[in-house]
Length: 326
Image (tube, rainbow, N blue to C red; front, side, top):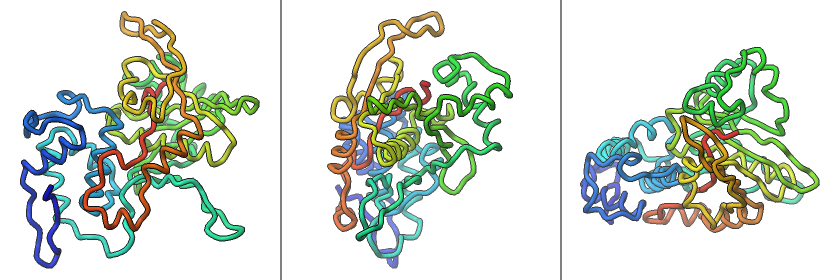
């Protein structure tokens, strides 16, 4: 691969499209001869949320620039042609100052001793999103999210649209922990992560993530849930986190089975929607798998700074079971 940047003092050169296609093909394990400018990531290649996040992180690591506006990538990653144009535009941006690479990936390393008697805080911000507490001014946006046609039927109310005052009154009922998902540097509400049915005796808890319909499949829900999982495992002694996923959303996380995700059970024809019954999967991520998987894929800053190309998959991959299934 020859994807590279020249010294900024000498100006930039646009990367050849065929080279970019080889990069994308390697990320997705596809034959580059089958890809073109008009190839659509979701509709034609059936790229999952996890794979989309892999492409984003591999692209950012390749360039050496951490993208703080995740919406840019979402808009650009429609086709290979639009993503190539975005890549060429990124090449025109100033290079970051010399120093350890931030890798542009989700900073999910569990809190560890910096020195005796001190601990790092649990990170609540990733490459593209921030987790923050639910505020009163968020209620209306969250109400619109959880009653949206594309999400509401598989979220908390199962398609029922409660009065706004009921929603506000019940927003924290039965919830162990929850956070609004916002893009870095913006106050927008683009999602919600929530933990519920916590069981201290068994050391288990359920978790879910609801994302704005326009962002489903973008990988942003994966990143948000990754941060949330790290928060749950770092803050409490849970040994396992459960998820509920309908069969048409299971494919978005199937590539992480069984390396990270376990399928614990299947409820046959459990959920009715639009004239058809769908299976519902019970999935789980254990503390051991989460920690081991993260340690295996996390490169230290020195290695990341000297790596020519970070392989696809060098980012946290977590389940976003239904992008809104509670």
